[in-house]
Image: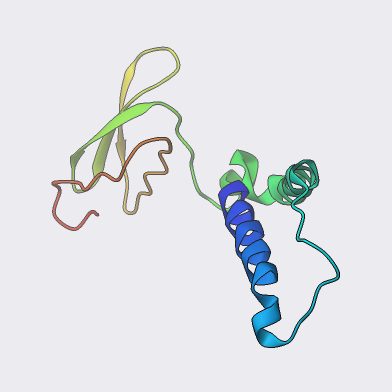
Length: 112
C-alpha cells in the first residue's frame, strides 16, 4: 500500500505540473505536502489492516510463516522459525512475499 500510494502521489503531482498543456490552469505552483501524504497512507493502511494483515490472510485459509526459508522441491519449503528450528512445509501453492532485496528467480522449474 505504501509504495503504491507513493507512486500514485508522484504521478498526480507530475500530471498537475503538466496540466497546462491540456488547458487546465492552476493559480500557483504545485506544492507537495509530504506530512499530509504520509498521514493519508497511514489512514489507508489502517483501513485495510484487518483484511490485509496476517489475521486477514489466516481467515482466508492462507497460512503465513515468518522466517528465513529455502525451497527444497516443487512442493516443499524449509523455514527456520522463531525458535530457530528448521520446519519443512508442504504446499500445493506458495507465495514468497519477501521484501527489501532485489529480484530473485528460483531454479525450481515452474516457480518464478
